[in-house]
Image (cartoon, rainbow, N blue to C red; front, top):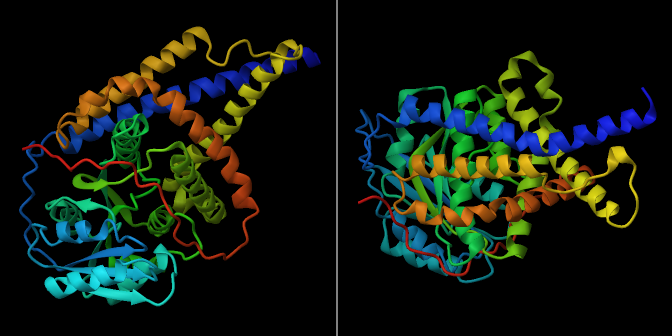
Length: 429
């Protein structure tokens, strides 16, 4: 084989991987999510009536807060209305520099369920969660962010998994987007259904979940104690604890009925910072657990590991395709490395149709949890352009930042874009 033949093969393989990998994964997720629906969701009550539990163990709802003066009062007010008989609320003020501490103290004086813990200095979300867990009187913990609104039946829906199976160490809920005033906000409504919700359903079927939702998750405290709680040096504590639990053979479940209404970025700058943090957190977990995965007993984590590793390679492959195409606009490229178009004719059409099919399936699955989802369907045609590019570049930028990160550096809070105008949460009546 000549060098020209080799270059041609490399160029074709690069293009094929860049376009067919997301195509393959889309149908893998769709099939897994549909199977999940027929196995678990279809038989459940359409109108969200919570299950009747044989027992209602005490639950501690932990709310880590850092500079949440604008949102925490609404969050705690919603928590005082939970439809669960035995629970407490532990709000951890992690060295806030605004009025968060004063607001928490005032609410604790008015509501007997609320306990407030003040940390003298900012220690990071992982430490705030640790402190809340240590002070909890309950075996079961529900952790939400200080700007989120938890559905009143969410705790009951999540607790059924712990009661039905002693192997369950964590349950991840179903985040729903409140900030929908811009196109980016509307696209995230579809993303959390078609990408995050669909993937969690599929991963639940295929064996292991890559990450619990940090904004709404429930834990068995004895499982957390076995794995050493949340790591203080990991950028994304939710991915970290998900892997620690599953590497210790605990099961993680996805509960779509456990709704939690959240604020998300609605600007490109805010979205970039958020997705870069997510990408760095995923890379950190992959590097930390790579050696342990060589153990045969950890084999159920292999598909999740290699899927994420492949997604990183896809980011670099797609960037290479873009660079080759751009270079071809200015210089004559060798035939094996010439990229005529970033979006090939028929593969681009198939990929676009698959993307819209994926959104249609996910909306059909989630319509039972949120009314009016399909009004966001048509804007989703812009999702590949906006979010695939952002995810591609963040995966490329994140890896070297993780490789050269100073070890044991404490992960602390970062200011996030909370959107422009949050809608009120809605649910089927």
